[in-house]
Each structure stands twice: as structure tokens, then as C-alpha cells.
Amino acid sequence: MKNIVFAGLISLLMLGCSNHDHSEPHIQGGQALAPEEDLRETESITLFSENLEVFAEFPNLQVGHESEFLIHITRLDSGYSAYAGGPVNVVLTVRGNEQAKTADPTEVEGIYSLVLVPEKKGIGRLSFEIEFHANNEQLIDNHVHIYDEGEDLHHHGSGATGLVRFTKEQAWNSRFDVMQVSTDSFSRVVTTSGEFMAMPGEKQNVVAKSQGTVLFATKNLVQGKFVNKGDELFTLSGQGLADNNIMVRFNEAKTNFLKSKSNFIRHQSLYKENIISQRQFLETESEYINDSIIYYSLKETVGTDGMKIFAPLSGYLHELNVSEGQYVEPGNLLATISTNRVILLRADVPQQYFEELGEITTTHFRPAYSSRVYTLEELSGKLIARGASVAENNHYMPVYFEVLNDGTLLEGAFAEFYLKTSPEPGHLVIPVTALIEEQSNYYVYVQLSGEEYQKRSVILDSQDGIQASVASGLSDGERIVCDGAMLLKTATSSAIPSHNHQH
Picture: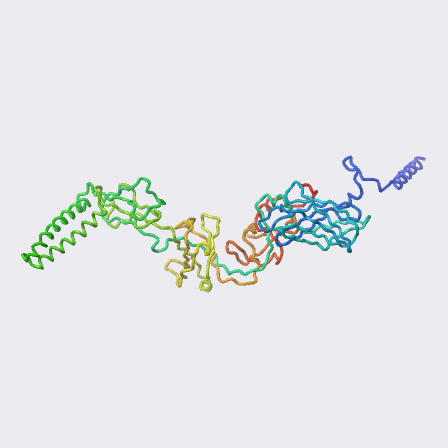
């Protein structure tokens, strides 16, 4: 009897399930959702012109059903920034049927919206007409699918792995840019190190011309100070010195000068009256000239305190080799002055690159104290010499360049050099700013759609500090992040959540 009752209950339950209405709305979170909303997935298209990028998101287009478009427009001509221009006209064309609407700007600059109800099914054309610099640019997608009413809608993912979502608003509000990869000419590069040096003639030593105690002309005479030609730097005082006292020498020179001058004037009159011989007069004249030279040379440099030392040229005190109160002998180095106007670059090339040495034409270089990479051309530089031999106790061959210092190059600093040969065509060239280095491997972020980027490994041929030649990993025409790649690296990437149109 129990078995009969149980079988009856099972039959009732199965009958109740078979009579259930599958068209009833599904309940989620206390709200009824239409069956249509469960099926329609968000689509997106990304279109490019030379100046603009259009990224549009919308539900699957279905005949007779509203689809709300969110259209993101980015300027490519002046950095990756939001478009803030005139109206945006959207035209959907399916089998000769044309539907045109104007998108309205939203509260967020660069984003427009509209609602479109497709009238025919099929593969259509969706075009965006945008006013740009008094001209109309038209960006077109010729493969938009419009489904029939009641047709099953299937969402197909991109299938790509390692995706990162970075919204347009994030890109517009940060330092970010995207570029299209193309082939270009690129040079073979020899990477090495070297040093900044002073050009001959642009640096002079200041030496002591007598013995004495060093007195500084000013209290702020320090290394790095700029001095003008003729500025007083030091005084060499002979006070307290028994031998070779400069003041004693000056007084002796003055006395000898006054004495020989008096003799010369007196003998000049006597010679005119034929009282003395010509020989005697010439001896007096020669003595007077010699004493004059000694006296006036000392008079220009010797004051009441001692011998004064002046700057031989305008420039910076590159080195200060003495301290105040220090005793020096004639010929001792007091200071070195450098104009710092012209810098000699010396790149030390390893011997294995000897065959390439004759092909080197220019260089890029990065000082050890800076992240900036300089080009030879921006500093009006030129190649002046290539080493033809290896110096003793040095396993490198020097290559010398001359540049005008823009005030940022420090004499004596070390630098990394990218020595370049003549450019060769057919290279896939990208900026170094696009590269992310991880454990000696290089990566770039490739733009797959408006807000989706893929991290991709690349292999480089070479790089010159500003640009790099890619051997594999990229194709001509792909778009990569050329500025702001670190922003994507720090973004959450694992699985991209579905976009809900909330900006």
C-alpha cells in the first residue's frame, strides 16, 4: 500500500513539472527579468581613422528591439584624449534600408549615446560621421549582424588570453598613448659605455707663478662657481717668507726700473750732445727696456698683499686644488676652469666590434645620472674620430664625438652609448617606451579592441635607447601601447568582467 501512495506522489510531481510555463520571467534578486534580457549580450566595435578612434558598445542588434549605444571617441592626433567636438551621426544600413540618428553627448566628455531599433535583419553597415577640424570623418564597419526577432543569440568571446581591460576614461585621464606598428629604417647598434670629457681649448689650468701663501679673492670661491675672464681668483702672499718673497722682488724691480729710467733719460740728452758714445747709449736703453718689462709685468699682478692670480677664461671652476692658507711653489696647480660649452664624448668600443667601427656614423647616449636619452643631432654634435689602435693597458677602441652642451651634461660623468651605423630599411620599429622588461624578457601590450589589451612577448633585434627593432612577436599594422604600458601592468588582468556600460 505504501508503494502505491509513493508512486502516486511522484506522478503528481512530474505532472506539475510538465505543466510549468517556460515563458514566465526568471526571478533574480526580487525583480523579474525579461527572457530577452537574459539572451542579449554586449557587443563592441572599434574603428580607426588617422585622427580618431571610435569604440562603440551596444546589446546584440535585434529587429524590433531597442539597443542603447555608448560611443567613445578618442583623438589620436594630439595624444590619446577625449573628443570634444561637434555632433556624431550614426547610420545603420541593411539591404538598402538606411536608418540615421544623431548621438547625444553624455555628462562624460568624449562619450555619446543613442537608442537604435533595427528594422531589417542581415549583415549591415554601421557608419559614424564625426565633425573634425571643419571636415567630416566617416568610420565604417561593414559587418554588423542584425538578428531576426526570436532568433537565438550567441555570444562569442575573443578567445584571447592574458587580457587587460583599461577603460577609455582611465586612458584619457592619464599619460597614455597608442600607436600603429609599421616598418621603417633602423640602424645596427653597438651598445657600450664611455665618458664625458672637456674639449681641448675649452679647459685651462691655473698655476702659481711664484711661491707664497694662497689667499682666496672671495669667500664663495668653490668648485662649480662660474667666473668671468679676468676675475681675481687668488693672491699669493709672500709675507713672512725670507727667500723669494714676491713683494721683495717687486720692490727690487721697481727700484731697478726707476734707476734705469733715470739713466736712460740722462744718457739720451748726453748722446744728442755727443758726450757719450752710441754703444754706451744703446746699453743704457737695453737695460731700461728689460727693467720696464719686469716691472710692468709684476705691477699688473702684484698688489700690496702679494701676487694676484686671474681667471684666464670664462667658465666654471671644474676643480679647486688648493685651500686658503696653503703654501705653494711656482708651477703648482691651483685650479682648473672649464667653459662647459663644448663636451667631448668618448665611447669605448670592445675589440670584437672592430669591423663595425668604420660604419659608425652617429650615436645616442644616456648619462649615468639621468634617464634621458640624447641624440647627437639635437646637440649639434658630430663624429670627430675613430680609434685606429688599442691603447696600452686598455682593451677598448675609442670613438670620439663633439657636442654643444645644453647645460645638462656634466664633464667627467660616465654614460651609456648606442653607436649607430647607417639606417637599413625593412625593420619593424617601435619606441622603447612601449617595452616592459621582466627578467631580461621584453613584452608589449597590443590593443585588441577599444578597451582590451593583450600582453605579448617580443624578441628584439636591437635598440638605440629611443627606438627598438622587433624581430618577432608583432605584425605590421597592429596597435600597441607606446606610452603608459606600466599602467596596464599594474591593472587587474586575469579575467575581464563583462562591461555594464556604467562610466
